[in-house]
Image 1 (cartoon, rainbow, N blue to C red):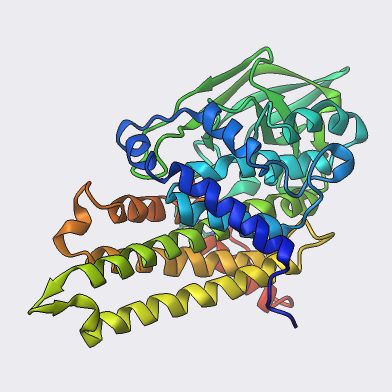
Image 2 (tube, rainbow, N blue to C red):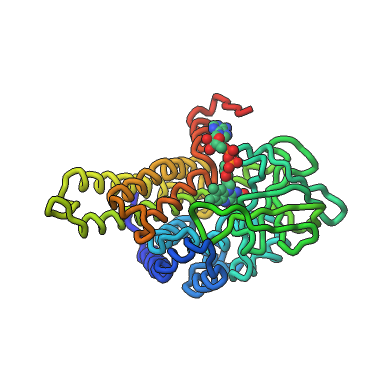
Length: 387
Ligand SMILES: Cc1cc2nc3c(=O)[nH]c(=O)nc-3n(C[C@H](O)[C@H](O)[C@H](O)COP(=O)(O)OP(=O)(O)OC[C@H]3O[C@@H](n4cnc5c(N)ncnc54)[C@H](O)[C@@H]3O)c2cc1C
């Protein structure tokens, strides 16, 4: 077992750190205004060579693996201290593009050139106003009508819905119940019957709206089918890139919180000496770093065991995400505590890092639901029906 990164991986990581640092000073303004120059950020990340990391070379991608994706995303999150700067990676090789990769040749040829070049970002739309954790109960329908599907229903909390132009939408085909009726199609925001709206304002991840998609007899060409009914496992295989992205966010956010705490406790004095020299304080930092290293190892394992190098294993990535979403907010809160009263002022970034952390606790699957999945893997001879 080799834990050392290759020279190429180290170079990619350094490039992603530099990219993130370019944006760090702007993150505060995006947070305050809940607005950001998304297209300019997207284009700059492309100029820095961070688009389409896991997309195959024959489709214009970089042909790298889940590990490289993870390293680059984590580095961007840590260096930029912003959720938003990871979006160009997500939209050019995350779960949406991975679903396109699992589609037929025609849909790949139609959309991958734009996606890998960053001309049109691809997000994912699963969640509905009445169905989040109970994804298998989703109600958005796709009914075949000649050479098109007619979609009806709505999605919410779709990160980047109003700024990207392609949406990998989870639908129920022909009213077939349960997981076996669920598949996905790719929808352009300009299709007839599709409405895109800005969603509610969040306390974290600000600057990029989490929007709503509505389908009223929306017309989607049949060649836009990504994954047909009866292939739920295949659909989730692509979705596991979402969880890897969440894992990278957690590691980057925890590291950023650690960085800020380490800086603050060396600068700030109490009782005539630096805070760092109190045992309770340096024990806190040692505890934070130990959790960070534990999460890193779970994430590396999830990335290194990815199927075909690019589709993370469900159990591995779910376990890693569960750890990150459980421990991450504790780390950011501890950092905030170590800042004293200054930590909750807008003058220090830790309050924003902490708000981003708690905003992401349920994104990509609530911890309780992840525990259901981990338990099902641990006890394969038992069933844990949620209905
Ligand atoms: C920042 C952010 C970004 C997001 N981005 C996207 C996106 O891009 N695309 C998209 O489609 N969605 C997105 N989502 C939606 C996200 O996937 C859902 O919020 C999440 O799956 C939880 O669904 P819910 O909010 O409906 O919570 P609910 O399903 O209502 O669950 C609430 C709580 O109930 C409990 N619970 C529910 N079911 C069970 C169970 N079976 N066992 C035990 N406990 C249970 C858990 O404690 C859970 O946290 C995003 C969400 C956030 C916060």
